[in-house]
Image (cartoon, rainbow, N blue to C red; front, side, top):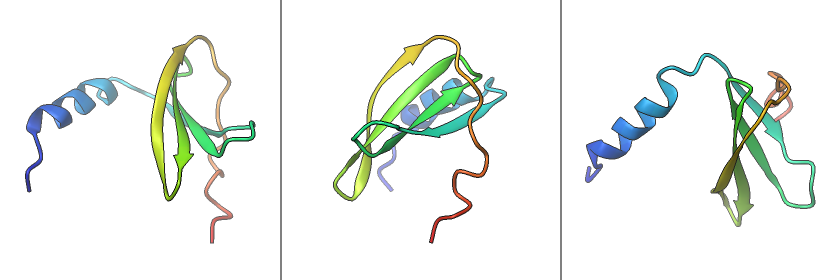
Length: 74
């Protein structure tokens, strides 16, 4: 399939010890969401046409997300 194993090794390393993942919609004019890992690392994703693109990360203390974020999707 042309998938490089190293990409998944890095993803596995990032998420393996994460105990909590929260998703929070962006509240700005841009559509997107924030993925928060263990309430201390925020990964930002913004809508880019028909998909989302990664835009960077910040570290700090974050509140928990809303597990019902996808409940009202059509």
